[in-house]
Image 1 (cartoon, rainbow, N blue to C red):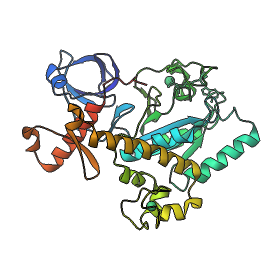
Image 2: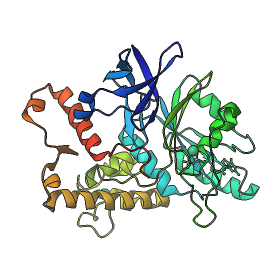
Image 3: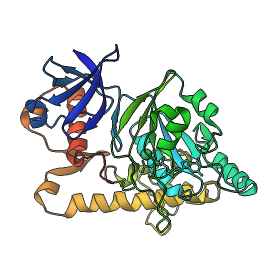
Image 4: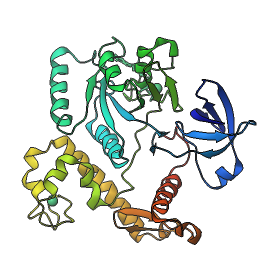
Length: 346
Ligand SMILES: Nc1nc2c(ncn2[C@@H]2O[C@H](COP(=O)(O)OP(=O)(O)OP(=O)(O)O)[C@@H](O)[C@H]2O)c(=O)[nH]1
Ligand SMILES: [Mg+2]
Ligand SMILES: [Zn+2]
C-alpha cells in the first residue's frame, strides 16, 4: 500500500491513504541502517503489517523543519511579541532559497502595534520584500484579519508554516478552522520568546488546502555554503555583485578585494537589514569553512570543500552510480548526517 506520512511521533509514522484511512506504521530495519529518514509529507510504501519498506520519490524536502513534498513555505513572523527580527526572517528566506522552495511571507499579530506604527512597519516590509518577489500577507489570528488574503494565496496547495516559536503558526491554523483546536501558549514575559509549544510537524487537511504545522526554532546556521557563494542567495546583493572587480569578492569593507567592489559602491541602495543579515551569515559560512579546512578531527577530515558544495566522502560502491543519482545521494547523505533526526531540536 502507498500513502503519505502526516505525522511522526518517536518511532511511529502515521500514514494516510487517499481514501482517508490512517495506519500507524514502523520503519523496516534496513531503512534505519541505510540512514534513510522518513519525513512528514513523504509518500511511502508499506505492507499490511504496518512496516514501511521505502520512500517514494520526493518533489523536494527540507530538514529544518523536517518536511517533504511541499508547494510553498509560508514564513510567519510576528510584528510584536516577539518583535519582528529581520535577521531571523532573512535566515529562513535564504535557507529556503538555497533549497529552491517557493516562499511567501505572513506577518501576524497585526492587532498589536498601534495604527501608525503598523503602517510604518508594513511600508518598510513591502519596500524590502516586494522587489525580491515575495508575496506578503498581514494577519491577526486573534482578530481574524487577513485570513482571506492568506487563503487566496494557499488554495490548492500543501504549505508549510515556518517561523520562530510564538509568532502564531498554530494560532493561524486554529483561526482558519477552530475545529483543529491545536495547543498554543503565550510567549514568556521575561524573555519575550515562544515556549516551543508545537513539538512535531503535522499535516492538517482543509478542504481547499493542506497546512503543515511545525515547531518553531532559531538555531539555523549557515554551515553548509561557501562564503563566496552566499551572495547568490541574496538577489539584492547579487544584483551588484556581478560587477565586482574580483569574482570571489565577499563585498566586505576592509577586505583585500573591497576596492572595486560594486556592492560596497552601491551600499546605499541595499537595505541595511539585508546587508547586516548577509554579514552575519557570511561570518558563519567563513567559520565553517575554516573549521572544515583546518581542523583535524576524523569527522571533519572526512569532508572537504569542493566547488561550491561541501561534499561528504562516500564509499566506492556509492561513487559508481550515475552522476545525477550520485549528486542527490551525496546531498542526502550530507544533509542527513548533519541532521540528528529530532524535529524538535530547537
Ligand atoms: N495578539 C495576538 N496574539 C496572537 C496572535 N496569534 C497568536 N497569538 C498568541 O501568540 C502566542 C503564541 O502562539 P502560538 O500559535 O502558540 O505560536 P507558534 O508559532 O505556534 O509557536 P510554537 O508552536 O512554539 O512554534 C499565543 O499566546 C497566541 O494566543 C495574533 O494574531 N495576535
Ligand atoms: Mg505551534
Ligand atoms: Zn564585491
